[in-house]
Length: 250
Image (cartoon, rainbow, N blue to C red; front, side, top):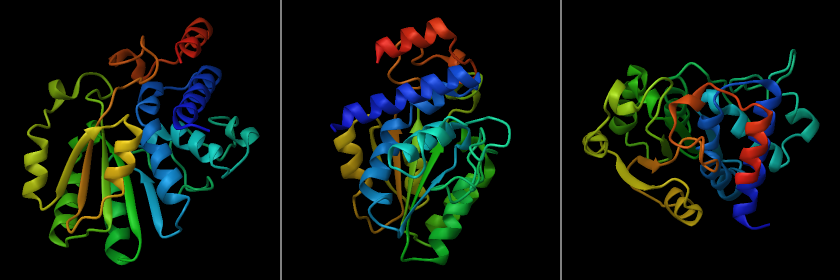
């Protein structure tokens, strides 16, 4: 199956489940599909020494759909998302096969990933964080720790879609000049298109002597034009008409 079809299948699942459950964060989920597919297809599924942490735990539906696609659990289980007594809660849960750490409150995943990388240098740690999440001081403490200890077995991938819950990131707390800040912390920094499959594979797989921070320029709501780059779709789920329209756009 060609890569573009994998992403379309997963985005369709995200749209359908969000519609059925009336759950939020659809645009946040759509922006990271390409990143997750690359990480699981080429790194995590192929080597049990490679560990992944989704720090932006509110986008767990995207992770769950990718885990289902790579046979961590059944479609029946996937469609229990957000239902009463389901293990697939609306924020990432370690009770779900393939999820090693529960996240949801922002600023927790990266410190945990830093600890994992520090304790076991033989493991390769991949941590996906959000741009709004960088507002959290705990992340800057983790970045200082990672840089100080020169943990080159960790890769931090930033979903830089430039929109957080209620506004554009630059209007809340401007992150720029982000690359310059990260360089000063001792990171090797890459800045790439977060929807370019081949580039993601190449850069995530790159060996570096320093901790690697990958800024991926992404589009919030990627794949559905009327959802793209809109603050509205952080919380709003699609109704039936919008679902049908979105699936046709895919």
